[in-house]
Length: 139
Ligand code: ZN
Image (cartoon, rainbow, N blue to C red; front, side, top):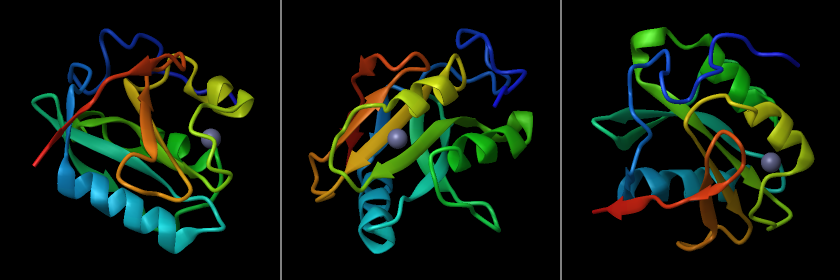
C-alpha cells in the first residue's frame, strides 16, 4: 500500500510537531481497548494538541488489523491534529513488525505499539521509521 501526502515528518499536514508526551488517561484508554479487543488487534489514530497526545480517534467502521490505523489517519482532515497511530500486538512483542515498518514508512510522527498483557509498561512509541522514541506520560 502506498500512502501519499505524509512523506515529510518534519513538516506534517497537521502542522503539529512530534508529540513529546501522552496524557495518562489516553494511555489507559488505549490499554483498556486493547484488552477488550484481544485476541484481535486494536488500532486507532492519535490526536495531539501542543505536542501532547490528548485523544484516541476511532473512526466509524473501524477495521481491524495492521493497516487500519494508518488508513484512518489518512482519512482525517489535515487540520485535525492527527499525529500518528496506535495498535496492539496480541503477541506481546512490542516492536514494529515488517508490515508495520512498511506502513509507517515516513507516515505520521509517532506510532504507539501496545503488547499483551497491556499493563502500564506494555507499550512503546516509535517514529515514522520505526525507531524507538520517548513519550512522557502526563497525569
Ligand atoms: Zn504491528
